Structures are given as C-alpha cells and as structure tokens.
Image (cartoon, rainbow, N blue to C red; front, side, top):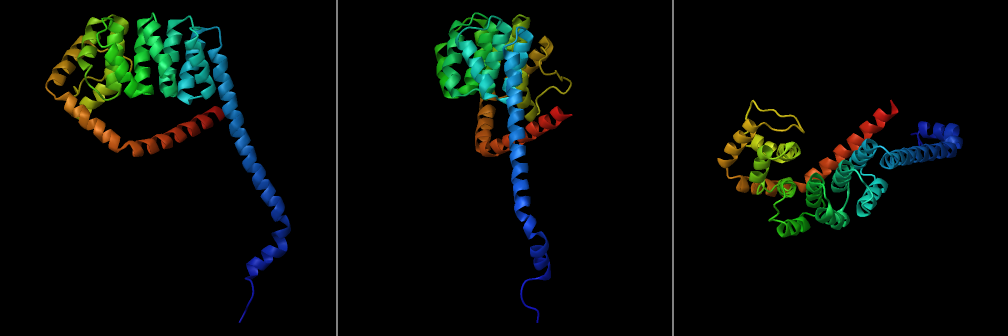
Length: 278
C-alpha cells in the first residue's frame, strides 16, 4: 500500500515551491495595477467633466452637466450645487441642465437648494426642472412644498408640480399636463408631452389603453389629436386607483428593482469602459 502525499503534490513541492512567493507577489501586483488603473480612469473622467463644466461655452457646460448626471460624479455634482447656490451660472439653459443633474445624481441634502431655486429662479422652464428635482430628491418634502404653492397661476410651475407628482406615480396632475400640452407655448407643450411620455404612456400601455397607431418619440411634442385621444381614454379609467395599485406593487418590488438597478449600472459602466478603450 502506498502511503504519504500523492505524487502530483510531491512534484509540485519539488519543482514549483520556490516560485510560489514570486507568483503571489505577481498576483498582488496585478490586482493593485487593476485597482490603480480603475482609479486613474475615474479621476480622468471626473477631470474631463470638470473641464466641461468650467468651459466658456454654454453648450460645453450643458454637456458636462448631462455627463455628471449620467456618471453621478460627486466632485461635479458638488460644483453644480455651488454654482446654483451662488447664482453664478448666467445661462438659463445651462441652469436647467444643472438642476436636472442635481435631481438625478444629488441627494436629499440638496433639497433646500432646489426649493430656493423654485422661489427665486426667473426662468419658468428652470423652475419646472426644479420641481421635478425636488420630487426626486425628497418626495415627502416635495409634497409639503407643493401644498404651499398649489395655487400658483404660473403655467411653468403648474407643469412642474404636475410632472413631479406624475414622476412619483401620482396622477393628480394629469389634467394639468393635458391642458398645457395643447394650450401652452412651444416649450410648455413639449415639457407637458415629455412628462406624460415618461410616466403616463407606460401606464396606459400596461392597461392596453394606449392608441396603437400613436408612437411619439421621446422629447417629441404631442399633437392636439393625440392629446385629445389620451384625455378621452383617461376619463374612461379610474387612474388614481390604478396608479395607487401600481405604487404598491412598486413598493413591494423595491428590493428587486434596486438589485436590478445595481446590475444594470455595473453593466453600463463596463460597457462605457470597453467603449472608451476602443
């Protein structure tokens, strides 16, 4: 009977044991290099976004804001918040992009800043973006803020509040959006259509009540005929009850959606990393 260690193990000990420390060091070095490489890439991207945000061209600053929102870069979001707080950005279209980025990538600590913008911002479409950001940053505090400004006669504020409620799965502002999608100016019609495209259209599609021949593109202003058709279909449904059921279903699936969001986020980051290296 053969006793002792297997022959393979013995050969490994004899031939390769002396190389084991070097192999361990090489593995650690490879892991360290990968970590360092990733950190350098993150630093490079953050620096590139900051260059865009500090550029002289408004279009570049807008592009920086959109990229900051997409990549959720803390340094860039902090810069955007500081610029808005100091009223340092002169271009209202850039301010709109800044507010959008803050609502998408900021945190509850930015709510007071967004609420202050709603009070002092002269451009109506920027206030509309601020309402949407407020709902995303702190839904409970948004509800209190909306209650204080519920009687606003300004079209942009009405659109902003209605769009923000719809973003939270609350359909109380749908009639307002349907109204301004027809009666507003070009910007107000587009903003109302965009809000309904994001949240109302998927709800009607899920119920089988979306017009089959109507396929508006994202960002496209809806025609008066489409708005009239949607209004008629909404009146035939108990939208508040349906939306409430949907919110409860979303709350029950919150954990799953968070996990899926993390997976999708990792997939997008990996895809961007691979594309950037091409």
